[in-house]
Structure formats: structure tokens, C-alpha cells
Image (cartoon, rainbow, N blue to C red; front, top):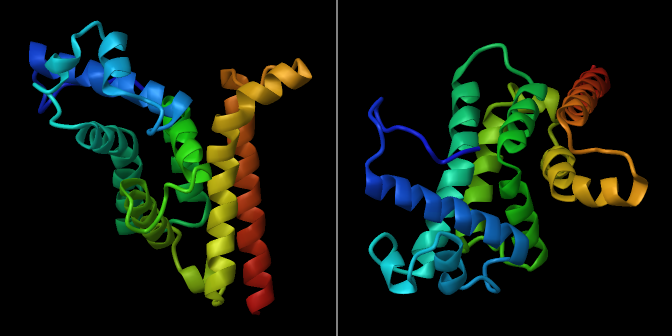
Length: 214
């Protein structure tokens, strides 16, 4: 996913283009090293700026991190919110939306997994708040939760966790699996096959839940 976008159908200004480059470079570094191990000097070097120049765009490392999360996760939250407002949606729709958007921006999957494994996705953390919003929107976008996900709250959360792992886990570790097996799991064909697996899983799970509720 490129940050070279337009605002309200107008071209980006030079400052906006620089800001977008900074966000994308920071996202790459955060996804590779994690937040704690990435310095503003590292980000500045990646975009060929002096470190003090970054403060013209972001007042702090925390502000830059917040911008990275918003850049990476707001499209997914927007898509889930749109699905929640639509009719005739089911469990497979939010799962497919997550997979599709992460395919366009795989750094986000690696960033999330990196920070989650470091224990940095608490309820009070920036990433934790984003994840809580995504879970809430995902449940709302899944149609009738009692029908598709069961009435047991723990079971519903486990189902959502499984779907989350199927997409985030795939994009975070597919490159490593490719190196280990010699089979390319990162190309477009593999993405499509993985998305079909996600869709089959969600359809099967929804059908099982409906049968159990009868």
C-alpha cells in the first residue's frame, strides 16, 4: 500500500508527500524492529532527512507511531464499519476484508504481531485501543453474532482470534515459511489461495454454529 495518495481529489503538497514518506518508512522499521528498537534517527536516515527535520512533521516518536497505526489500520476499521452498516453480511465478510487489506499493506501485519508478542498491546496502549476497535467493528460486521458466533462470549472471541491469526499470522510469517520449505507462499497466487482458505474456514464455522443452535 502506497502512501502516495490524494486528499479530496487534489494532489499532495510537497510537505504532505514528505510526511507520507516518513510514515511509510517508520511503518517498515517498526514492523522489522518494533517500536522500542526504532529511533527517530533511524527513520530520518531512511527518508534522507536530518533528525531535527522530523519534528516539522511529528512532535515526538509517539506521535509518529500513532500516525503509522492510523495509516495502517484506519482503512480496515473503515471497511469493517461499512460492512456493519450493510445488510446481508456474514462471518466471512470481515475476515475477507482483513485479508484483502493486509495483502495490500503487509507491514501492518508484521507490526501488529511484533508489538503483540512484546506485550505492547495492552488495553491502554495505542495498538491495544486500535485492536479493541477492530474487534468491536468485526463483531458488528459479522451479522447476527448469536447466530454466526454463538451465544458464549468466550467462544465468540476465540472465533475472532482464530480469524485474526489466519490473516495476520499468514502475512507476518509467510516469508519465513517460504525460506524453510522452498515453496513461495508470498506471491499473488498464494495470497488468493490463503484468502479462499479463510473464506472456507469462516463459512464452515458459521454453518457448524447454525447447526448446533438448532
